[in-house]
Image (cartoon, rainbow, N blue to C red; front, side):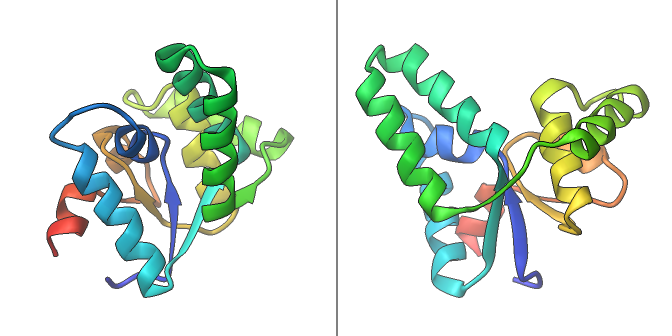
Length: 142
């Protein structure tokens, strides 16, 4: 790995926590590898909220969804979703056709904090100027 920090997109922990999928194990392995190698993993607080919301919707279990989100918040370093990030996200949405909604928030969070690598299964991050996309499939196989 030629980077020392990465912003983790919600797709990675959601696949890692989810049901059977071709991406479940690679997402788990990618996060484990990053943690073991000392790469600093960051996330927007919005990512944690997104994971909690999705897990609640999928499982119907509030306690489980909250516990999973809390555990995830202990693995990553949380970055604020503030006015500067909001403005950056809106600008990205206007300029980058493939980046919408929460993805724009995550990308703007990375850019606002000088993080230039995003770990995601979503190729849209690759179209954001200033960001490099790392797919968990490539990372877990390396």
